[in-house]
Amino acid sequence: MQDGMLQLPVVNFQEPAQAPTRGGMNYKPSRFNHFHTLPTGEKLAFNSLSGGLAVLDSEGWARYTALVKGEPLDPKNPVDQGLVEGRFVVLENFDELAYLKTLHLRQRYTTEAWSLTICPTIDCNFGCDYCFQRHRVSRMTEAVQAKLLEVFAQKAPRLSKFFVTWFGGEPTLAWDVVQKLSQGFMEIAERNRVEYSASLITNGYLLDEGKVADMVRYRIHLVQITLDGDAPYHDQRRHLLTGEGSFERILANLRLFLGKPVFVHIRVNVDVRNREGVPALLKRLAEEGLAHQENLRVYFAPVTSTAPPSHGVKGFCFTRKDFARIEPEYFTLAESLGLATLPYPSLQLGGCVAAHPEGFVVEPDGTLQKCWDTVGQPEFAVGNLLEYDPLQLAENPVYQRWMSWDPFSEKLACSRCTWLPACMGGCPLKVVFPEAMPEGKVELECTTFKWNWKRTFTLLAERAGEAEPAPRPCTG
Image 1 (cartoon, rainbow, N blue to C red):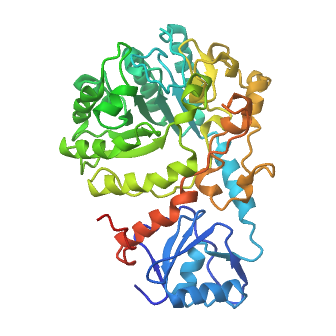
Image 2: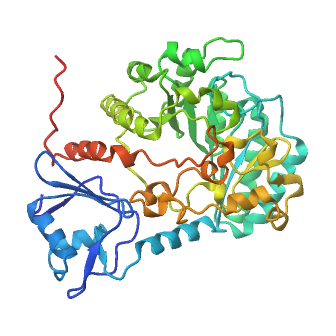
Image 3: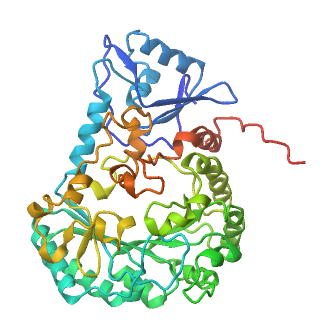
């Protein structure tokens, strides 16, 4: 560690550093700073706009304090340089919020990249008790498939990137639709030199070697599969429509991805009913040879009851704050087993794609939704792909409400929050359509780092060898 300041190996400057430092200029503290005193007495410093993480010893802290009190910056002092590059101090006349809003709007309204979610079916073979959809037997029509290819071909000459998320229902129930559209998208992308890639959200039950080979062929680079604890917990809530368990088959199917160029996110949905089953799941995954795999990671998410079909599980859901308390325990265990790395906040410039003008979820009959959570709910539809007209869409009152989403609004606490760059207001649905929430009011979906960052980043500092481990409670 150099005297004064250490930028940890996990430092992640996600935005360009400020202009080269010069002496004689006044600086102020960033509004996005977070500080925590480590057991060593050093200061752990994190900036949510730059992603900069550092440990400041007494000299480094003294320099930070001096700069924000008006002492001139020393351009030859590496500590001063680090404080500026990490955006821990910013020029006195620099408006960070206006800068962040500019970056947000530039990305939100970009026309160079297009992200689209496609539901080849909204039928499902599972009967999950917390599902937010009303499933029905369905299959994407030939007319809608043709229109998807037509619209992409029209947009392609002006695009640099096109990203598709295959969703449902359960998309593997209509795998031939995924195959056909993927081939068509790839051909159009190649003709227009557009970078094409896709992801797949699946329950994992119907996967086989052929489908995994198709994922490689059709550039499905990311797959999300859910396991909600070890078998007794998972099978109680994520079972087949017949009531039969699904855990063991999904576990076996995960092995199909070993050594393949497809990244797998194993999602663990957690509420008060299965919180005790998470450690057993992680140990089972490790025992089955799924640990220390470059293309496999576990992550955790709280069960929510956003859409009406899931309102019945509201009483079992954690608040964001309560979930934040247990999340580090899960990640710490998963990391120790080689199933995850400790989480690190990323800069969410554009926010949720639902608030992008061209961000849509396409249902099998062509119905256009803006959000995954509203699939199958016609009252949230903004139009139909078969009648696609961007100008006409703008006349739709539901579409207008989505476009009104503004995380910088003075009506929301977000514009005053030091974590705004890391969540960009969270879920727009919970703000723009408060009447659809279980309690009929605005619900802000804050990042869990807001409550557990000290614990998580102290662990990161310990991993870097720059902080003494905090005392652990005696377990007898």
